[in-house]
Image 1 (cartoon, rainbow, N blue to C red):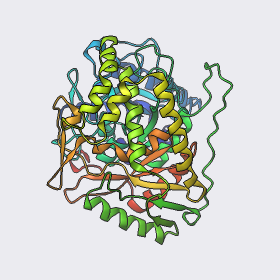
Image 2: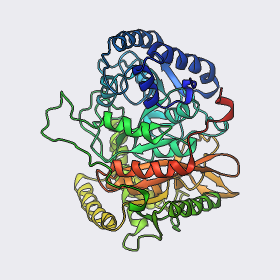
Image 3: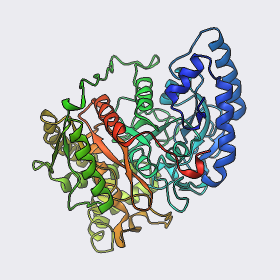
Length: 492
């Protein structure tokens, strides 16, 4: 039997069902891998091995009687430390929350548990999931499994690193600024940003512990090493909550395409707002030809009816509004009173282009937000007209591969060296903004490596609630790219 380190969760669950392995054996295997590999990686930052093994024994006893809890019966996994999990601290990287133990699981976590998953640990992230790298004063720095001198991305960086190193078969991430898609891109695994609102956010930090409402833009979503596992997790995570008093019935449409020949896609990889590295462009072009050989209709052009810069600036404004609300009351007052001035000064103090829109968003009034939201709806209507002609839109995730660790305190002033040229740190964000600002589903799928051997992905954006269509198209790309091949040092 293949070692379980890089076996899919779908296959592991099947092996438990068929009694070819046991939950205890799998749980012990991943515990041993965490103990062996995590010290140098620092992806898993808290564990509850004793409880996990007890639950695995119960799962095996039930399986012996033919009583399976659900499609993830007995499968061990880790969870991003922004989600509350009973029995382990949920810190979101904050020293203030180092002793925060939740009395109940986050709703998304509970759905995985109800499907039979066994939580063995929590994975690292930046402070309050607020950076594009994964480090914090409480738990330290997480390294990229492909090159420890580089970041695995953020904020679901510990999750992506754990997957790429074979410390877990599946993961639960969250995404507001590419926090699922960028770490997946940096680590060469699959990640899916879901349609806004289809997975409850209750039990995620931020907001504050106990928050019942969901923030604008932010979503939960699955991360894995295969499309099949993304599909499995999506089916588990998107369902009617038994304890949620809502008449809303979420039934995602099935993927309706019968073959690659049924797909017509818009490939948009070139824009002066955020040009991409030559290695990525070359591979994307080759991928489009490979897709055409499979019968996919690929049209390479930018959508003329959409102003990319306007969309990006709107995204920054709305993101600023969300991030501003996470500040302490005094900080929020300062931001509100200073936003207009800071917005004007941003152009003159070496802040990145367009950054003044983020600053203004952090201090805008509710009336100001309403005007921006109306603009969002109008731009969304224009963008989603594309789906009357195309099934999905293909774009880059990030314009470069994983960057070296950089923990300098002012994030907006950090620089990225890309092929010898200096770029703004915020160049991480334009391409992911498209799906986020409009609440659309987007799958980050691996497609190749650059000349230094670092992996990278492509982004597959679908229309609202067409999550299964983006996953179906990701499976076509997977058939071209092949199965996940782990970094050599972790392939043991």
